Length: 233
Image (cartoon, rainbow, N blue to C red):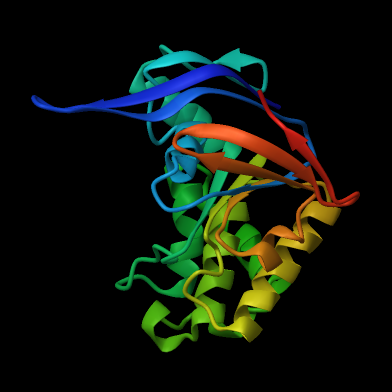
């Protein structure tokens, strides 16, 4: 599903050049649940943003679902992103002025789904995530855990091929954080492909494989089911 070869990202200013990613090699197969870990500034969020087509690499190859992404125009990347990728963010990124229903519906509107098809989709995903009774509420009327459930519903509404989660429990207490991780585990059990960035060893333990990054490079990988470390390079 994801095939990355020698991917690099360089940020340049007039006086400074910073290599955020240094020849990353990574494969994620369909149905995997993979975690990326590392200290702040190691490049994990940059990598996630490139995989999610929110940012572009400087060099290397990135194939998503068999299609080369490097070199595509923004309009082409936007189309692929809307059709294939769902995002879950640490800060939820809900629109305060919109109701829960409208927040969940928004990606369907962006994808030009007819109005007659949107309501049953929103109601079905809301029921699945146990937030049907909150559809008329606004984000600020919800708990953190409920807001993250709305964010998950929005991420899933277009049936994405891959779910990208950036610190999905970072702003939640342990109870709500556990609920989100259990939700991601259920999604994975039902066939979802998930790539998650986290600082939490506990959250990472829910995934099948953990990738450790430092200074823009992948240092090692850990198979969580077998507790085996693999040194890269």
